Length: 495
Image 1 (spheres, rainbow, N blue to C red):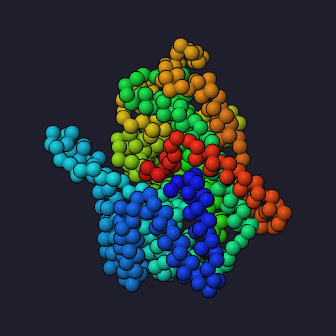
Image 2 (spheres, rainbow, N blue to C red):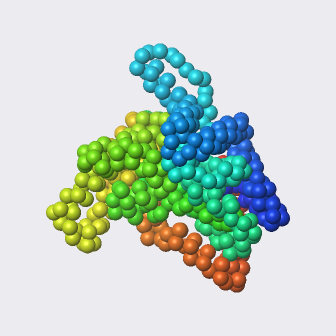
Image 3 (tube, one colour):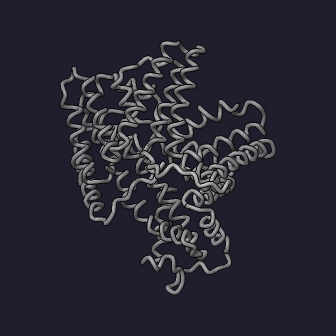
C-alpha cells in the first residue's frame, strides 16, 4: 500500500484517522493500540508473511529493554543484555539482507555451490532494526522510563516511518504518545499536514516518476552491455540524481505530513542536501536521522575524532563503508559508501588546510560556488555506483561521461538508448534543468511546512482555503497516478 495509491489515500488513511480521533478522550491507550494495529495492518498489506517477524522483533526488543531497565543504567548486567539484544537484531538483519550476498561471494572464491534458497527481503527491516537497536542503546546509556507495550509497538511500527524512515529514538516519540492533547483532533495540524503531504505527492508522482524513465533507460541499457554516448550518460546520471532527490524528499514530506495530521511530529530527515557546500554538510542534510545514527552508534564508539586526524579519517571511512552496506547487499553500495568515506576524509583535511592558510576563504562567493560545484559533482559520481547493479554498468556510464570531446547536442540519429525507449533527449535535458532549478533554488519544504502550520493554527479562513486547495490537488494527483500502467514504489523501500 503506497502512500501514492488510491487505496491508501481514499480508504486506509480516512479510516485510521477517524478511528484514532473518534475514540472517547479517556481511551488514550485504546487509541494508541488502534494506531499500532493499523500500522501492523499497513505492513501486512505489503508483506503478510513477515508480520510475525515484525511482531517477534518488537516483543524481543521490548523484553530485552525491560531486562536492561531492571538491571540498571550502565551496569554490567545491563551491558550483557545490550550485547545479547543487539546481536540478535544484527543476526536477523544479516540473514535476511546479507546471507545471499555472503554465500555468493564465498562460492565465487571457493568454487563451492552453497545456497540458502530464495530469501525475500522484508520491507523496512533495516529501519525497524536500527530503530530498536537505538532503543536498546539508549536504554543502557540513558535509561528509559516509558514501557507501555502499546506505545512501544506504535513507536516501532508507526506507519508514516515504518518502511523508509526516519530512524526514530524512543525519547522523541514516547512523550508525544503520552500527551493527552495529541488525541484530540486539531484542524490546524491536520490541514498543515495535508498540505505537506500533498507537496510530497507532487514531488514523487510528477517530479521523481517523471524523470525516472530517462535514468532507467540509460542504466538498464548499460546493464545489458549497451554503451551510452556522452550525452546519454550525463542525462542518465543527472536523471537518477534528481529522481532519487525528489523521491526521497517526497517520501520525507509525506511522512511528516501524515504525522502532523495525527498531531505527531517526526524529526526532519531531508534538508535541501544538493545545496550543501561540502560533503560533511551534505550528510547533515541527507537522510539526517541515519547520519545521526551512524555518528552516535558507530563513528563515536570507534573513537570519532579523539585520536588524531588519521584515526578520524579511518573512522569516517569505516563508518561510511558500513553505511553503504546498510543500503544494500552489493559491492556497488560498498563502493558508494567508500567513496563518501573518502570524500569526508578529503573534506576534513581540505578544510583544516584552508583554515590555516586562508581563514577568510569562506567569505568569497567564488570559493563557496566552487565548493558547491565540487560537492554536487562528487555526489553525482557516487550516485552512479548507487544506482548501477554492476561495476561494468557503472564503469560504462562513468567512462562515457568522461568523453567530453563528443558532441553534446541531441540529434535524432544519435542517443539510441533514449530513442529506443521512446524518450526525447532534448526533453530529458530540459527536465534536468527544471529539476535542478527546483532543487537548488526553490523554498525548502521544511520551512514551507512550518510557515503553513503557523498560519493554519491561527487563521480559520486560511485553514479552510488551504484545506480545499490541498484536497483538490491531492485527489487530482492520486487519480492521475492511478491511471499509470504500474505503481512506482519509493526507492528507499528497497533498503
